[in-house]
Length: 518
Image (cartoon, one colour):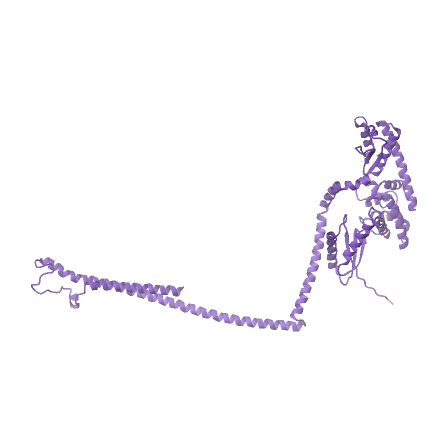
């Protein structure tokens, strides 16, 4: 850029000089200069005597004088103008010469800088080659010291990074799962309450509704009474809803308490058999039905105690045990389930060498908290254990009762036996209203899905398919991989199978070292 600027300046100056020279030559062509001697003397050139003036033969002397002075003054002015322009031209030439010197100096500086950069580039290339060579020497030396090639060392590093990432991923998964579990407890309770309120009606109607047959639909009006006084009295005494609708020849009794529902059924049957239906008679029939149901509850409790062969129980526990006859769990009668658990617990305890009597009593009473679940807050296992202590049962029996759902950590073998008997009784085909074919198919699908993964040795579907226990090979699956495996199996079960409730996936990794002293 600087070179181009200098060239343009030179061209401009040259053009100016040419124009100035042409302008200087123009006056000399029009008015030729006087001879050198006349110019120096400053006097006009004399004419021959008698020669007329330029103005004519009759011109005055003054005109002659003016005509003589004009030719001498004009060259002087031209010379002065030429002199000043020469000075200007000299000044411009000096300025141009200075500019040319500056441009030359800058060009030399640019050339020097370019040579310097070229030298530095060559030095950098040489240094880069030396560094690359040194790096190669260093890698070869490291390979010689380590006894590994660069590729082998890279693979080893990648494996270590992969193991570290797996460990970190498993740790993060455990942390996130724990945080999510704590954060979702309150929301889960709310969602469950809403879902139960919306969808439980269809299932609950089978176990919460009793039907009383009528001889004719005319009896419905008598049950309702004048202005509804009879039905209001019945509902107030029994605590059960009497549903009188368009169903021909029947009255529906709805309530969650099986004992109250049975009392209401017996009361209504007495009223229909007697024929008199009014508030006083309703109260009398209700009292009679309540006395009969109390006796029946005690009889049922004593019969269950006799069938389980557990000896005697506190009268209050016997009464509570009889109340379980009117309660169901997943379609299974709770009292029948308790008796079955008692038999199973005694058999298992005998095989394992545990206390069969303690196991049988704990199995018979393990669900007794359900008899008062609508009256006492808390899990039925803990409520049942507290009732057992209050009515004189041993600590071993109470502990086994309250630990059968892991609200309390099992500390005795009898507590574990109660869990086993409860699971066997509830999980056997047909115990809780599930067909054998669906039951077997679900268990097979669960076991097959879990067996597909590498490192899995054995798979057991337990608790009617509500839990999968996966036993892995300890040499193939480490602790972190076990965490990831349980999560993977759970996600596959969610995507591929349809099931009610939830399924627990437990991965078991065990390392055993055995030796013998001889």
